[in-house]
Length: 541
Image (cartoon, rainbow, N blue to C red; front, side, top):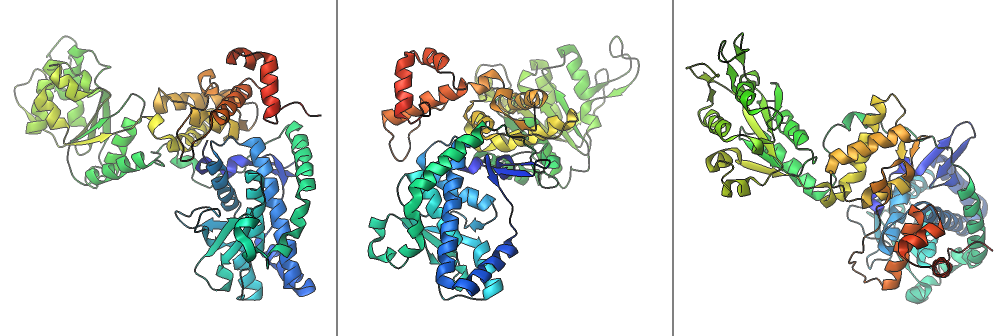
């Protein structure tokens, strides 16, 4: 799972009856931004700016540290870099700031650039422009979060600030040694951090207690209209964004389109996009025919129509789908399955823009755009003599290749959320949310059946879910079994790190059962026990 996959609605749960709100499993509360601004003003007026800064910095540190503790208990991120990125992502999801596009993290040489900060906004509102950076809570949060994640003391300082008139807030994080003398003026505001050992022990005890509680989740409603968009294309990945962009461009002209891709990748949805984005065709019908689903003797009649008496059972004249789609778009699915005889007649219809019904001698003009789709390699079919070369070139004026889901993992979770909403609506159940564990399994799975397999998995999860949240146990076995795959990262990981991640993943899949885990790994239970103890995952003393 990646930091970019985090969704606030899945990390935030609420139990109205108990009056409990939890963020990533940890007890949380909602605070009004203006009220926080008034608190800041009262602190400054009462105890002075220096003391107010110390209080808010230490408060922010505790908040960041606790957030990291809770996230580690709930999330399964893939690398140290993902954990660092998750801090900014979570902070943004909580509404405290907005990172500038393409911004790096605080530990980067240039620091983290923030283009909106609730803290700077509230300081300007209640106290006016400052002479120095004022995002004390945000700096404390980043310090606490990174100190927990890195396992060492990290001090985050604000170098530029919207609250003093700068174009952006910029936060830089370093160790005390790396800051050197530059840290000395700021160190008093962090001094309470020297007690972080007791904070860590308290946080760990609280985390263990919270994890033993059964979360009674009532997910917050999504923004209005989210479910309505669930049936459309999801294009979070660069590959799908390119497909959508090209589809919208070709929709502006009347060219024939060939959509290629594996079975279940969503070719019909792309065809619908081409139709709906076409200024000339959108008001007409969009009709589809599966060329592989109709027996050859009937296929020609379905496409081009027939005259009365043309064959046994033809008791009246009947228009084919080419004529019925006049003014709109005809979607020929699985066009690679067309018999040779029908290929010839389809080529003539495309070239002459007219069709001849079975049993008639006259041709009829047709005004229709053809969008064809196939999961076959038509160029290879042409070379093998199974598909006409001239028809291939006539269909392949513009090709839209849909990548398989395994090549666009950024789309998996947005698609899953939309499909969950659809399945829940069909079953007349409240739309559930994905738990972080379930989301992680979805991202790891290879999805050989592509979007169609994902749709089936989400329908199954809605049917089996016991509450308002989809857990990993609600997913199909092959999805639950998805394990992390070793990958080359910018920072080369040791074999010990890879082994630890894999062992912990198998343990999680077996719901903590060490005997079953050891058997699957092919090692003894005592060996597994020693390794877990070395990872800090042994039984509590």
